[in-house]
Image 1 (cartoon, rainbow, N blue to C red):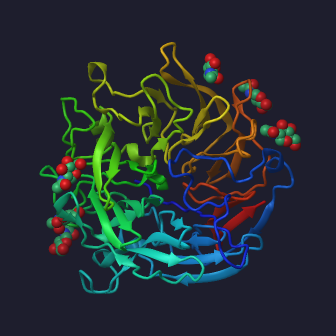
Image 2 (image 1 turned 60 degrees about the vertical axis):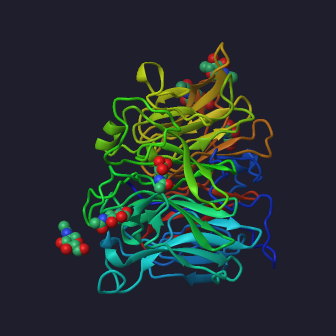
Image 3 (image 1 turned 120 degrees about the vertical axis):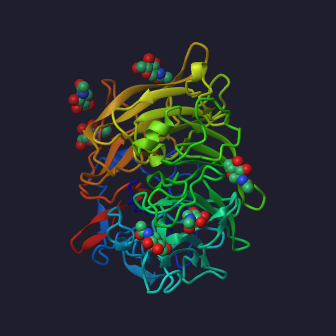
Length: 529
Ligand SMILES: *[C@@H]1O[C@H](CO)[C@@H](O)[C@H](O)[C@H]1NC(C)=O
Ligand SMILES: *[C@@H]1O[C@H](CO)[C@@H](O)[C@H](O)[C@H]1NC(C)=O
Ligand SMILES: *[C@@H]1O[C@H](CO)[C@@H](O)[C@H](O)[C@H]1NC(C)=O
Ligand SMILES: *[C@@H]1O[C@H](CO)[C@@H](O)[C@H](O)[C@H]1NC(C)=O
Ligand SMILES: *[C@@H]1O[C@H](CO)[C@@H](O)[C@H](O)[C@H]1NC(C)=O
Ligand SMILES: CC(=O)N[C@H]1CO[C@H](CO)[C@@H](O)[C@@H]1O
């Protein structure tokens, strides 16, 4: 498992009273995680010119890793801050909790400390921002102020104007018993909340995994109702008798199957939630094939479709688990290093397939799935994977792909150490959906590259831009439509070397926000306009 994710949210603060503008970003990408954002006034003619420039940059504490933008930022050091989007002037700042020490978890993934990691989500109807924060309760499970056993997680709701706690928050997550396994309860100290958050029918959901697979942990999905201010879901990805209920400090304990997705959000269409899990232990599926609705309890290396109950509880209605998942387990080759990309069904569909999704993890095998029938386990011909299509990329992906549903339709992925690749969308003679690799970038991306995010100027033909952040090279942008010789043409944008890992740029009315990597005393956000 790898773990740094630094994210950004864009929220308008230009007027005295905050309000939602139609070009604001209130969550990480779109709820479906398709990666396509049509309405942020990003014009490629401007982006590819000197008019697109760095508007401001801010520095924060040494090694404080910035997480959000105008106006709301949340960091690994448990700071939340607001800024003026145009000038960068600080408006408010608050440290919600003492951050958890990386030395308490024996994992170098987050050396600067652990606080708020998953990108928050804003509810514009109440001006409230929601996030999870990792900290301590002194003498909670062991003596002392710190230590892994005193590590806990809180769920916060904070007023985005005052940065004060909304009534009823924060809520402590620790000791919550899993809704689908009475033997498992939540221990914040060994857990790591990494996915971006999503707000579905009044409940905020976030995925939990571990730090470097250390200690006894099981991947969990938490849901907190923002109206009743209660935890309404704590779903253990592995449950039942085959799970090893080991001591907290056993490195092979728990069920594993962390939900982290390199910081991507669970994907949702408003009623269903899709997540992808990582490596596990003791998976039930073996020689026999199994249907996606068969009630598998060892949901490791799986794409999982949850139904959301009226109260916000989660139940598994469908899953896909690759036939070689045990081999993936034994090599720590997480399918769930990437999230699920739910594709726009008004464009990406075909005979007998109304809605598609895409997933690719560390193995580099890109699976195109039927979102309404994910495929179960070995349900294909001759016990093969029952998927719409499988495409092998040159390397693994941490963080998922992104799509552009116009002008024929494209899917973009950024395998580590390789060129970014573009697939076009078409149909076979029988009408089945087919993706074909048609182009690649001249540039190669290093480890920690973010998820492809695609903008357009309100859907205008030829205005698509595909964006990636690269930890070394910084922000990159390409024309989304491949050129005729099979290349993605890059746009000329200002150098912003040194991005934090696994981030998406965020957008608001012709502006873009980024999180730059700590370099000595300097860290912060760049806004380009
Ligand atoms: C291991 O952790 C799980 C919670 O994930 C818990 O149910 C179990 O009791 C723990 N084992 C021990 C021996 O503490
Ligand atoms: C695990 O923790 C228990 C106390 O909870 C302690 O007695 C035991 O020695 C620890 N084991 C290891 C391997 O650290
Ligand atoms: C997709 O690319 C393939 C291979 O280059 C090409 O044959 C096909 O016409 C393209 N399909 C569309 C819809 O552009
Ligand atoms: C394709 O065209 C671009 C310019 O549009 C050029 O930089 C690139 O080298 C060409 N690639 C190939 C494979 O010819
Ligand atoms: C960007 O602008 C340059 C001129 O500065 C031009 O040569 C290039 O084709 C443009 N790139 C794209 C992808 O539009
Ligand atoms: C008690 C309970 O609800 N158990 C469920 C936990 O989740 C698995 C996976 O969906 C179900 O099979 C169990 O029935």
